[in-house]
Image 1 (cartoon, helix red, strand yellow):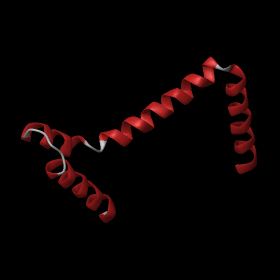
Image 2 (spheres, helix red, strand yellow; image 1 turned 180 degrees about the horizontal axis):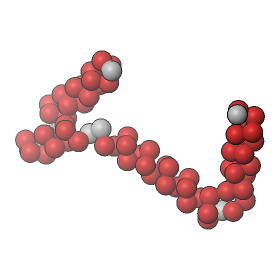
Image 3 (tube, helix red, strand yellow; image 1 turned 45 degrees about the vertical axis):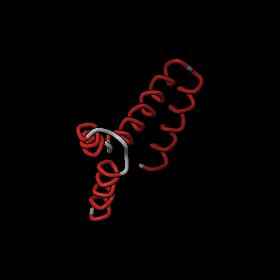
Image 4 (cartoon, one colour; image 1 turned 30 degrees about the vertical axis):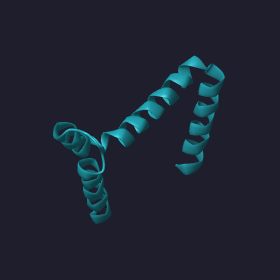
Length: 74
């Protein structure tokens, strides 16, 4: 938890003082910078979900691995 807060504060400091922009843009970047990794995770998750439908063999393989994992781990 402490490391996460320190990382966030470090990002805020870089966003406020490390870029060449007007103060409004600096403040916006400093406050919203954690959305970048969240957007990456959301994009990868959606691409994986869509690939299950778009590529049926891949979806079948994922379903088989999921079923095998459920069978062995229950």
